[in-house]
Amino acid sequence: MRVLGIETSCDETGVAVYDSEKGLLAHRLYSQVDLHADYGGVVPELASRDHVRKLIPLIKEVLAAANSSTQEINGIAYTSGPGLAGALMVGAMTGRSLAYAWSVPAIGVHHMEGHLLAPLLEVNKPEFPFIALLVSGGHTQLLRVDGIGQYQLLGESVDDAAGEAFDKVAKMLNLDYPGGPNVAKLALQGNGAAFKFPRPMLDRPSLDFSFSGLKTSVLTAYKQTSDYPAKLADIAASFEAAVVDTLLRKCERALKETGLKRLVMAGGVSANVKLRADLQTMAQRKHWQVFYPSHAFCTDNGAMIAYAGCQRLMAGQQENLAVTVKARWPMVELPAL
Ligand code: KG4
Ligand code: ZN
Image: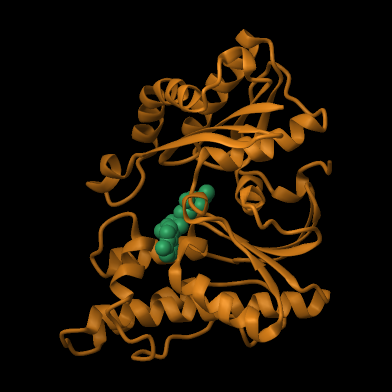
């Protein structure tokens, strides 16, 4: 089966063609970073308008790159939530309409399921069951995954998501949007042990996370510590170390509690180089198998949506003609395959 995937849940227009037999045929991403940079964050209305402008030309470009005619597309997958409602509607309406015009089935994909399954696009893919750490701009979750649609939530952030904390700390340090990569870049020049920031919730038995207290500690350090040349880099590195440490310790706990040895990490923050490196080191020491997407498929992209949609379409699931999008949508509500 050959599926066209469309991602428009936030500030990236992502399109891909995935073929169940031949793999990923082509993918393209158009990022709206420059559009939102002046505002220090995503402006939902501008995001929707830009998706409207960019999506159809991008679909045309990806079909050409995939060397695929429209007749060869057997299904269409679009992100139907969670995300910005207006932005989601652009991808959903376009995807549903094309499917209607081409007489093929369409499926609305859960954005976080897309992230979760992105490591399955790689050559070396995880087998079920595994523990998944999903770390994006809107979600920080630990799940037990027994198959597609078989998700048990083990823990999640009770306040800010990990990516959101990176973005807010970036603002405090006067770094440009998008914050995460810029904090990580500055952290490279700093000392991660310079500030002893709290490792939130590690003293509690649960697998939940909390990042808002850490953010406050960063602000206090920023305001109170006397200025010295490397201060901002030290704050960035110490913050990053606290987040990475917290995420890894909770993963360790989840693996221990479930007796599993396989860990999958996905979502925008999984692009973080220190997180990947520290996870790798820990995995070697503990004899875990770890999997994460290649860099391009950590952050939002069309390939993960095409892949997840293809699995559900092949299982016979599809949408009717009434298009719905969901700004909020718990992943555990998804049906099992
Ligand atoms: O998955 P994603 O692209 O979009 C959502 O579904 O939210 O994740 C975006 C988040 C942003 O908060 C961004 O700052 C963060 O991922 N991020 C990073 C890095 N790259 C992206 N955080 C830390 N280090 C990075 N290298
Ligand atoms: Zn995402």
